Image (cartoon, rainbow, N blue to C red):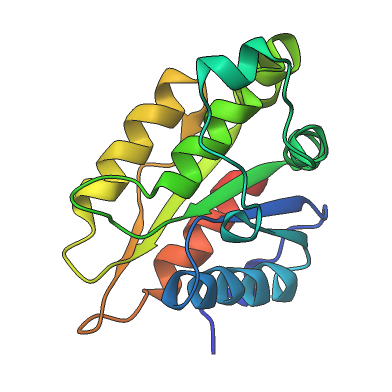
Length: 176
């Protein structure tokens, strides 16, 4: 089913799969999960659509509001060796689930920077459109946050399946 599985790594890594969309993007996250586990890695799928956090505002921050599970999510991300962020393209950009989650995590300033700095991140999308714009938007955000991004991304849509070789390469690169 997958390519080059004879090149399995000897050290098991933990891969965080950040699903910023449901439906086809969650399906893509689960394909990454299956492949990473076949390669000998453990995985943690994070469903951002299920968080249901309010939109971050100055008023909520001044009131000291902290969404339930924000610190736990940061701890889970911090405990992973590498991440794959899978998000749909919304109007040429990222979905609000991803942007809002990152904004809420930033209230834990010292821990926030540590979680993102030098983290290996792969990007993927299943989009109704081309998908290039969400990849560019995520690349810009994660780069700004100090992450080390994998050059190759996985882009799929109704006419194009996710490339298993590209998926494998991303997993390999974030776990090395």
